[in-house]
Length: 445
Image 1 (cartoon, rainbow, N blue to C red):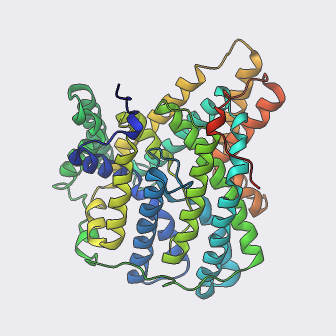
Image 2 (image 1 turned 120 degrees about the vertical axis):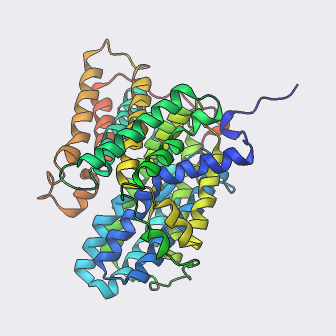
């Protein structure tokens, strides 16, 4: 009798792999290029050098994504999980630039990031054991918070990072949103699963005659431009910088753990301690390797968890295809220029559905928790409130030390920490279902 293959391990036809992979790249492209844009501007890179820095981030994100999805030995969660540059690294990097100066900063950043990556690899088996403190009341809260905290990103895309959105921006976002909803409602099978990609195409085609498509990303991009190892400087090891990046490593592990648990709920394959440990190892190795090519710290991308929930394309090989596409974009910047043609308001219209889908997945998980106990309602309310503080007021923690702000300024990390602590204090003693012995992380020797 043939053993059925779980949808996560199924291998779709090539056409579906490419289309699904492009959809994931479109969903995360803006997120993966924003940190190098900010960092490159801070250190005063030229336009050509900045292009190489962005290519390096795309290239290393692709490598990390393929490692995470396909897996090598005990590295990789083997889930449809996209990895890319984390925003948590931006604030510490800018602080290093202020302290060491633009000319010497990148070497110090890469040295600290390299150590942080190795620390994640070493800490993975210990951190994975914390999953017992993630019952549905906690995971549901965190997943909901991931979705809600990402919605302002979509709103920022619609307004094109301006204080208010103009009529053209609203038109493009509305057309894209309607196109995504229509494709989901009236198409079936594979085509309904790539509704986001189809919506982006429709929105971009509408934007073109309105003059809202910037083709300079395509015409000015070089055809080929891979970064050679240590192009931006060899690693320099500075204790203060390493400590700040070690805090970023904790944030990476917390966010990636939350995303893996959320993704496990979405694809109906609950994550075990071993899966999380393997996924964190991939984060750490991807982060360490990224420093060789000019990339930065890698973490799971929550927006792509929402895309998996929206499209129901659970195959990890679809996300592996997106990793391969990212590698190509890093090697051939002209190809990345094609993806960059999509205007931000178009991306924002699709993002409303995309990120809202993550919040819905969180509500589905919360439905498994008992709300007959008033304490559970209080736990969810308080954790959501704490997690939404940096979203409602980005400068709320401005007076706090930089080390604390690294965690507090991330609504996902702050809310996750609050949910875990509040559940330990006020919740019942229920924990996540115990994982089978054969999937548990072995005790390190």
